[in-house]
Length: 133
Image (cartoon, rainbow, N blue to C red; front, top):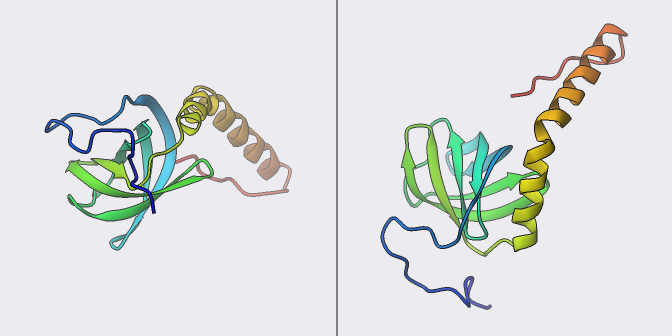
Protein backbone atom coordinates (compact mmCIF):
# COMPACT_ATOMS: atom_id res chain seq x y z
CA UNK A 1 0.00 0.00 0.00
CA UNK A 2 1.38 3.39 -0.99
CA UNK A 3 1.98 6.14 1.53
CA UNK A 4 -1.05 8.47 1.80
CA UNK A 5 0.94 11.64 0.96
CA UNK A 6 3.78 10.51 -1.31
CA UNK A 7 4.69 13.91 -2.79
CA UNK A 8 4.18 16.07 0.31
CA UNK A 9 6.42 16.63 3.30
CA UNK A 10 5.83 14.26 6.18
CA UNK A 11 6.19 17.04 8.76
CA UNK A 12 4.52 20.42 8.79
CA UNK A 13 5.24 23.22 11.23
CA UNK A 14 3.04 23.08 14.30
CA UNK A 15 -0.30 24.76 13.63
CA UNK A 16 0.21 24.88 9.85
CA UNK A 17 -1.99 23.24 7.24
CA UNK A 18 -0.57 20.75 4.81
CA UNK A 19 -2.58 22.13 1.83
CA UNK A 20 -4.61 25.26 1.00
CA UNK A 21 -8.32 25.09 1.78
CA UNK A 22 -11.47 26.39 0.13
CA UNK A 23 -14.30 27.88 2.16
CA UNK A 24 -17.60 26.04 2.02
CA UNK A 25 -20.82 25.59 3.91
CA UNK A 26 -22.12 22.13 3.09
CA UNK A 27 -23.93 19.59 5.28
CA UNK A 28 -21.88 16.56 6.27
CA UNK A 29 -21.81 13.72 8.77
CA UNK A 30 -18.85 12.61 10.87
CA UNK A 31 -19.17 9.03 12.07
CA UNK A 32 -16.96 7.94 14.96
CA UNK A 33 -17.03 5.49 17.84
CA UNK A 34 -18.87 8.22 19.79
CA UNK A 35 -21.73 8.11 17.27
CA UNK A 36 -22.97 9.94 14.21
CA UNK A 37 -22.48 13.69 14.25
CA UNK A 38 -24.38 15.89 11.80
CA UNK A 39 -22.17 18.83 10.99
CA UNK A 40 -21.26 21.51 8.46
CA UNK A 41 -18.20 21.25 6.26
CA UNK A 42 -16.74 24.74 6.68
CA UNK A 43 -13.57 24.38 4.66
CA UNK A 44 -11.91 21.62 2.69
CA UNK A 45 -8.55 20.74 1.17
CA UNK A 46 -7.04 17.63 -0.29
CA UNK A 47 -5.52 16.81 3.11
CA UNK A 48 -8.26 17.73 5.61
CA UNK A 49 -11.22 19.85 6.62
CA UNK A 50 -12.74 22.02 9.31
CA UNK A 51 -16.12 20.96 10.67
CA UNK A 52 -18.69 22.95 12.59
CA UNK A 53 -19.97 20.25 14.90
CA UNK A 54 -21.72 20.00 18.27
CA UNK A 55 -19.83 17.97 20.84
CA UNK A 56 -16.70 17.81 18.70
CA UNK A 57 -14.77 14.57 19.18
CA UNK A 58 -11.43 14.88 20.97
CA UNK A 59 -7.97 14.98 19.43
CA UNK A 60 -6.97 11.69 17.85
CA UNK A 61 -10.54 10.43 17.39
CA UNK A 62 -10.82 8.39 14.21
CA UNK A 63 -13.87 8.86 12.03
CA UNK A 64 -15.50 8.68 8.67
CA UNK A 65 -16.62 11.90 6.97
CA UNK A 66 -19.53 11.74 4.51
CA UNK A 67 -20.37 14.80 2.40
CA UNK A 68 -22.17 15.36 -0.93
CA UNK A 69 -21.75 11.77 -2.10
CA UNK A 70 -18.09 11.57 -1.01
CA UNK A 71 -16.51 9.87 1.96
CA UNK A 72 -13.12 9.91 3.66
CA UNK A 73 -11.53 8.24 6.65
CA UNK A 74 -9.98 10.84 8.92
CA UNK A 75 -8.64 11.70 12.36
CA UNK A 76 -9.35 14.74 14.54
CA UNK A 77 -6.19 16.86 14.85
CA UNK A 78 -7.67 19.71 16.92
CA UNK A 79 -10.98 20.52 18.50
CA UNK A 80 -12.62 23.53 20.08
CA UNK A 81 -16.11 24.43 21.16
CA UNK A 82 -18.40 23.29 18.31
CA UNK A 83 -15.65 22.86 15.73
CA UNK A 84 -12.78 20.57 14.88
CA UNK A 85 -10.08 20.05 12.29
CA UNK A 86 -9.60 16.67 10.67
CA UNK A 87 -6.79 15.20 8.58
CA UNK A 88 -7.72 12.66 5.92
CA UNK A 89 -6.03 9.26 5.94
CA UNK A 90 -5.66 9.51 2.15
CA UNK A 91 -5.68 12.71 0.15
CA UNK A 92 -8.81 13.72 -1.71
CA UNK A 93 -8.43 14.38 -5.42
CA UNK A 94 -8.10 18.09 -6.18
CA UNK A 95 -11.05 17.68 -8.58
CA UNK A 96 -13.26 16.72 -5.60
CA UNK A 97 -12.24 19.84 -3.68
CA UNK A 98 -12.98 22.04 -6.70
CA UNK A 99 -16.33 20.32 -7.30
CA UNK A 100 -17.32 20.91 -3.64
CA UNK A 101 -16.50 24.62 -4.04
CA UNK A 102 -18.80 24.83 -7.07
CA UNK A 103 -21.51 22.92 -5.20
CA UNK A 104 -21.19 25.27 -2.21
CA UNK A 105 -21.77 28.26 -4.48
CA UNK A 106 -25.11 26.86 -5.69
CA UNK A 107 -26.15 25.07 -2.48
CA UNK A 108 -28.27 27.86 -0.90
CA UNK A 109 -30.39 28.18 -4.05
CA UNK A 110 -30.74 24.39 -4.37
CA UNK A 111 -31.86 24.15 -0.73
CA UNK A 112 -34.37 26.98 -1.18
CA UNK A 113 -35.89 25.23 -4.19
CA UNK A 114 -35.99 21.88 -2.37
CA UNK A 115 -37.67 23.50 0.62
CA UNK A 116 -40.21 25.34 -1.56
CA UNK A 117 -41.06 22.08 -3.38
CA UNK A 118 -41.55 20.17 -0.13
CA UNK A 119 -43.95 22.90 1.08
CA UNK A 120 -45.90 22.71 -2.20
CA UNK A 121 -46.04 18.91 -1.90
CA UNK A 122 -47.26 19.13 1.70
CA UNK A 123 -49.96 21.70 0.86
CA UNK A 124 -51.16 19.49 -1.99
CA UNK A 125 -51.16 16.40 0.25
CA UNK A 126 -48.31 14.66 -1.57
CA UNK A 127 -45.59 14.75 1.02
CA UNK A 128 -44.27 15.97 4.28
CA UNK A 129 -42.14 18.96 5.20
CA UNK A 130 -38.48 18.04 5.55
CA UNK A 131 -36.22 20.28 7.63
CA UNK A 132 -33.21 22.00 6.10
CA UNK A 133 -30.85 21.73 9.03
